[in-house]
Image (tube, rainbow, N blue to C red; front, side, top):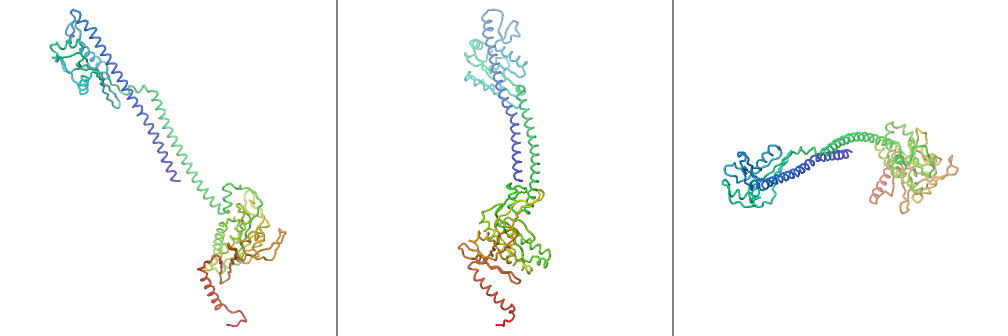
Amino acid sequence: MSKSNASGSRSRLFVVLLVLALLAGLPLAVWLDLSNLTEAALRRQASDLNSVISSVRAYYASNVVARVLAAPGSTKVVHNYEEIPGAIPIPATLSLELGRVINEQQNNIAYRFVSDYPFKGRAPHALDAFEKNALALLREDSNQKITAVSASLVNDKVRIVAPIIMGPACVSCHNTHPDSPKRDWKVGDVRGIQEVTIGQPLAANIFSFKYLLGYFVFMAASGVGFIGLQRKQAATIRGMNKELETANEFLAGLSMKISRYLSPQIYKSIFSGQKDVIIQTERKKLTIFFSDIKDFTALTERLQPEQITALLNEYFTEMSKIALYHGGTIDKFVGDAMLIFFGDPETEGEAEDAKAGLRMAADMQHRLAQLNMKWRGEGIESPFRVRMGINTGYCNVGNFGSADRMDYTIIGAEANLAARLQAIAEPGRIVLSYETYALVRDTVVARALSPITMKGISREVVPYAVEGMLDKAGNKVEIVNEHVSGLDFYLDPSMVSASSADRIRAVLRNALSVLDRAAPKPAGQSPG
């Protein structure tokens, strides 16, 4: 039980950890998707802004500056337009001014218009490694799209670089201007770069997923609540299981105690549901065994109650083991007597039930001989000598008594006949009724006794005293059984091996010799 509890605890812990891991993975998945979405949006915004500025500068160069230069007049196109009244900025200066305005007004957008060939007298542009590398790459292939993405846990930033291409007007101006650092420009050359940088914290987009986040929060709360409910239910179930385990242990102990008062077959049939505990009987043909200890009353007068109790309990224990081994149903112990029957609640058939009863009786006599030897060794002068009777006939069997107290037993004249057969048996012997003898005649040697009559039975009953058993070949196996003061003798030739036979003969000859020397001669017999 403890192993199953430990396994269940590990399973519950695994489920809890798995749910927590899944719940923890939801914010991570949202953060990754949000980061990708932010990056894509920033790329699109930076590209669009770069395109807009390029279009504005191109329009300004071709439709404003070019028209001013083509028409004679006082308007000048110079880089220092602020110092000359009526002047307008050149396209490069416009881009620089536009970048300054954007940088001042937008916290998350930056625009740079830079070149590594500044005019004389103008401050050089500071280029970082990314810008220098981008400028070099674009001069190799101006069609490239160069971007850089930097991300942190809370912020994403995208930088997009586009080339500044020299047009015909730009080439003419730069190649003739006295302050130009380079005078061999060609149309299509990359003079510099324009860079758009857009940054945005992830938190700015977090509320775009307010419904999804709300759902996640709800699911997380539901998951935590579910885990709490599961833990509460698990604790309740553990408590119930513990109570059930305690109750089961109590019931198991109680049923074990109750089983001591019932025959195992009856106990099994009741607890398996085969039989109901109601007052109900049925008529069956049974083989009934009855045994009684000869002179038990006189024995109780010679021994102390404690000794009698110990002897009787040991006797009943050993006899019960044999009865259960052969499939007998132990009905009851009546003082020193035993009532056992075959055929209910389980039966092997009339003949087999009768044979099982006979084999049981023979084994009981054999075991009793061993017990007598043991008890004599313990100082008991006259141990038990048991008479046994077996009868086969119809009896009423089932629950007898009241609704509050009942007993599973048998009643009928055939049961009484088994007790009567026991009464006429010699100590240490077995007596059968004719009905039983007819069923076991192929396994036993018996002699008929004088017929007897009995109240409740209209016919004469012919008893048969068992003299021996038949082996498998049909040969008689005589059993010699004698127990008197000074002698405990039991001989079953079927159980003697060839190697032991010679030793038994020697023991018997020696016993006769000892008896002849020690025993007094009968009166009138002369010595020798």
